[in-house]
Image 1 (cartoon, one colour):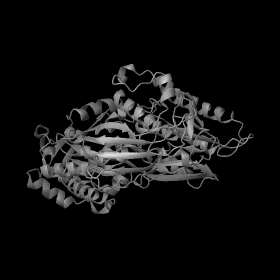
Image 2 (image 1 turned 180 degrees about the vertical axis):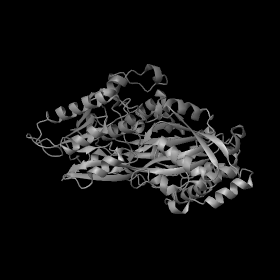
Image 3 (image 1 turned 135 degrees about the vertical axis):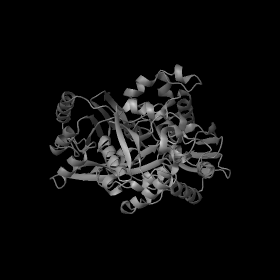
Image 4 (image 1 turned 30 degrees about the vertical axis):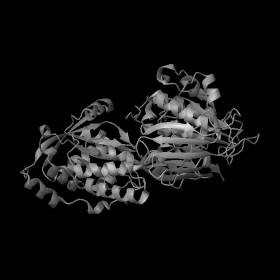
Length: 540
């Protein structure tokens, strides 16, 4: 599976000030009387400030959080989520679908009358072509289609997927832009192909980075790297028209600059606001501070290989879990951060409610476990920490909290801070005795969290090898292929309860985040799928 990490290095303060000047100057050039409202010529214009991770706006290649923000506005998928809800799938370009009894055939009926921003009609063949292109490009999102065996069409409006095996996460995966309808005629005219050699033969990326060929409510009007992306209405859109005529997503890498511009009324939404800045803005005139739960978790990885010493002992790993002062950990994070059950984020289908952090620490039990396996006098272990900040939490500070907590049971933690890339290499090769890590799911479904099981990608990085826990591994296979929601939830509940007690992963928190809007903005709900659903945002 190929994943794109979402961390960005800090830029120089001088660059931040340049971006602030761009934000301020750009906002004054739209003929607007105010943001979030109508300009002198009646155009309604939304302006956002973000610190983005764009790599491409090619729907067959993109797999970054902020790219999703753009692409969901420009491309229609068969199914989608609305607002901040990632549990309830709703119809998008499809008007209906059926699933065969063996869960190996999905048949979608596409709503007639939909049009691309070129005016061309959307057909089942456009979907088939675009999805096959995404598979053959072999880019970051291609793994989402791993269980598709073949795709066929039946007339203009019927699209059929044949699966290699049941995939309980398949419908959620269909919300990604790789599965969106793309105007084949326009794309091929600009170098796109769905041929088997598309990875080398397709030359459309550059065109897609500055244009769009979708049937969503917006289209890309322009993109200026390190400056902004401008979206305007798709005049041929057949769904409910969005409120805003134009959306500018402006790059402002410095959080203080984002705060200044939203306070000054020059932007409507500041996305990257830290904990202290959000606190300072509470109650400010014309501003609303929002708090939202993300799906990002931070956790300790404890190496299971015996060569890494006592930390590999399952009893010691349990002792570490009981030694953590979870309320103290959460005090370092944004308001609303929680402790999930195992690596399964609260809010995903099949997840259990968050735990009571005050009931989790048990130093007496932790010390007894240490004594049981011969470590009553403790031991020394290295903790590798990437020098990053995750949603307002400085990882070195978090590591120092862990260090203090584990000292209570005799574990002497030696902190080794590392550049993110260096720490990532040690993590990937499974050579860290103990690591402080973060994880943001590949898609908003607990199927993505099965990566933590023995023999899977994250399990391997803790040297928790396949065969280490056969009963748990069998449950994981059942969860992957069980499509019935109730039955699947029961399986995930069982997996979560086991992993909250018996695994080399100690989940410290599920991070909340914060952002600010002008107080006339509505519908700006945080989404663990799209970041924000721009289709739903309006102004009062």
